[in-house]
Amino acid sequence: MCGIWASFHAPGAAAAFPILSEIFSEPLQSRGPDKTLVVEHPQCWLAFFRLAFHDLSPRGDQPMVFFEGVYTYYLLANGEIYNYRELVQTFSLPMQSKNDCEVIYRLYDYFERDFSRVLQHLDGEYAIVLVKLRGDTLLDVVAARDPYGVRPLFYGLDLDQQKVYLSSLARGIPYQETHPFPPGTWMHVDAQFHTEWYAYHDYPDDFFRTADTSRLCSLLIQAVDKRRTGERPMACLLSGGLDSSLVCAIMVKILGVQDLHTFSIGMEGSTDLVYAAEVARFLGTHHNVVHFTAQEGVDAVDHVIEACETWDITTIRASVGQYLLAKHISETTDFKAILNGDGADEVAMGYLYWYQAPTRLDAHLESVHRLQEIHLYDGLRVDRCLGRFGLEARVPYLDRAWVDFMLRTPIASRMPSTQRMEKHLIREAFATHYPGLLPDSVLWRKKEAFSDGVSSPQQSWFRILQTEMEKRVGDKDMETNPLGFPEVPPTKEAWYYQKKFKEIFGHKPLIPAYWLPRWSGEIREPSARVLSVYSSSSSTTPSSSLPVSVSPEIQHGESSSDPSKT
Image 1 (cartoon, rainbow, N blue to C red):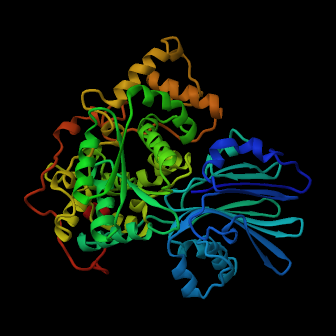
Image 2 (image 1 turned 30 degrees about the horizontal axis):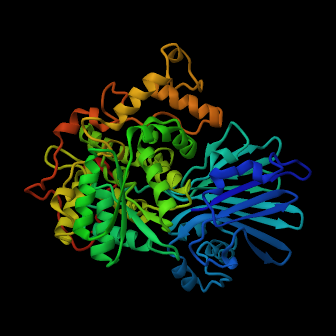
Image 3 (image 1 turned 90 degrees about the vertical axis):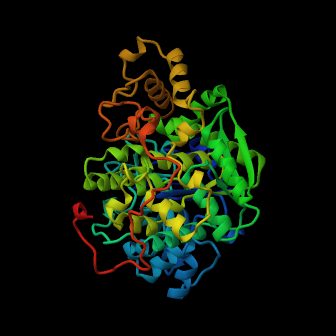
């Protein structure tokens, strides 16, 4: 987890921010607490805030600089390139450091400046800015973001004034028209500031005929294993739900990690804490529990809005626990890399509203849609909250190979129903191939959203927040629209979040709408605890019949391009 910032301008034009220390202050610098480095050039400023994992020596610092004849290249990359050693070996790339991100420039040179080919070979999460200069002249800029937007990047363009800004956080862009850099996309800016955009990542449009549960397990295990890289201490978040529990179980019982430290958070009566403790005892981890009161949670809300740069209701609710837990880890331990279970629900139809999908095709397209927007909502939670305290989030469920495999698996195997609970395919796969990996009570536990699970069913976290905001916001306030966006705040809680967002960020249009469950009628409340399916969905008991076949290999060549038939 690092912070990057770059500004580019025409010759003689003044940069919007003449003093870097006044731009970034604490939020961006906290993403890279180890070291801050700045490069100033007549046509660009580049800044890097480093949280070091690979090559802790100065050789691993950024911006990295490379000289090729009369040309100078600078590389900024907030990322983890998990296959960098393989790439170095495959293409015999010369390396001047042991920093994994150096491989980005080496591939760029190897492929003769074909940036699209570079991106196709990278396995990891990243936000990249690569600059080409000749003396005092800016010649080219290319920038890119990983396929699911795990690493943050924002941009601001003023092409009339020939200015371009790129930043890890939206607050680093000096314009109201600040936008999230689209995941799976790269941008090219030439010397005349002509800007072109290219998509390099596509979602699969064909499907396997059977669900290969063996392959599902092996790809997820590989996704967890590759995220153990780096030279800094590592730990896992453990909510007690299926997703984080499975990551911890893979670490301990399959990959053989010893002395694993796990972290949970909750209020008095939290349903998550009970299951998390059960998993920790089962796996023998060094388990750390953080308790917070309703008042401590409420007091953190403004900080969460600033850290996550959002006014979305469900994102803010879910991020409070994450924020307080990250603060605790940062202040009381030396851990820097934190594995977690985010992303599984979007990939594997884990949210309870998927029970109400009208058709298989609708269910699949909703999964793709949620992945395409995960960087705007659930993707903010771990990255921004952990990053705010100098920690790096590792997200195995957003591994590119695993996501691609899951989206090509027959829809009927992924879709929940009255006979098959949510994420049944994953549960059944590990129950079949790795029996005893987790207690059945956790392996078959019904989905509980993190924003709900931190509290008790009798005093839900979302009810606590609604009660507090009823005190803070008057009826007259509800006659106004703080941001002036088409998405009018539906509740006093929503109104307060928009108002606080405006105070910090102005009118930056960072999200298009509120995150809400689909196929749920006129419900405007994002908590799953208000859905009828919450009390009626299956839980904690495996199905007596297997709805999927167990095949040793994917049946390549027997795919279908028609999702309605899968």
